[in-house]
Image 1 (cartoon, rainbow, N blue to C red):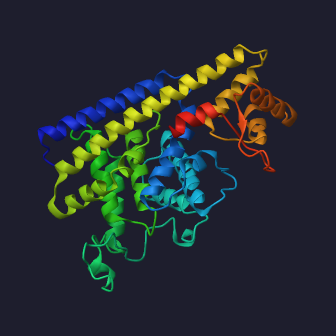
Image 2: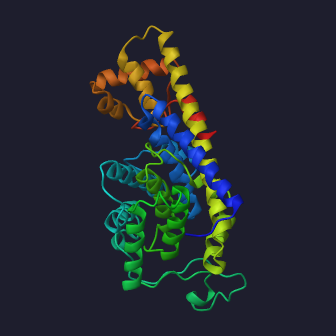
Image 3: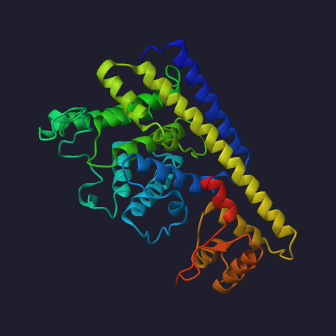
Length: 357
């Protein structure tokens, strides 16, 4: 356990308070899982951008999960599917383990050029970054900023020990925020997979907090804050390895969690307010069907959707789903994304404005 300074302890305490406020807000909502998908898509966009896979936020929110239009959107939407799978496994009582994390990484890389060598601990050496002024013609390990653990027994043992440590209860000795910071550093240091280590590692922050009972509803977007400070983020991780500077890293990490929790809570409340406003519009109209209100819920939970999705989620006929969408479109609650598209997708401008804003 690192010896932390008073300033770092204060940052950790502020992060815990912000996480507690976020969780308390989620528990007060009738259906907090309703807001998980839009939050996950924002997280997916930011965490992928940190690794050089960029897709515009509006495209991410309106993308067709069944047929992503670009390779970048494939990876971004893979993250959403991976995250939902991991959250479900933890809520079902499965522990964090090497097999679970390997499966998560395999799901993240589906449909990419590295799919064939994913879903398992790497068997080749990787390097991270490049030292300033390094000869670009030099051997990769010589010019890199950091060389993770070589493949083989040490890497496999290190990952297994980390997963065992993450699933153990350290609450009597280590604050969960500190434990999440330490495990995130160690995962990134091991860099156990050929690709996706940054995205999986940042996802494990939220999964760790869920498993530790800090978040009952794992709706937290950590990556936008780190993405906007990517240089310092990488420097703080590196300084732990180079100078054992745990204080600066854990303080930085804690400030990130505090800000992420505050921003996620604010967006959650904004989406709830939009949901209420849209339902008020319904009540002021001639529409009285419960399915119309259910369609508003679906529009809040899914930044874009098809009539087929409405049919499946609401359990109505395709004709009824189509009529409901048309009625909400007439009320200007919904709009069509591309009127010329064969498979039309619909969205709520009010919801999208909150998500992008």
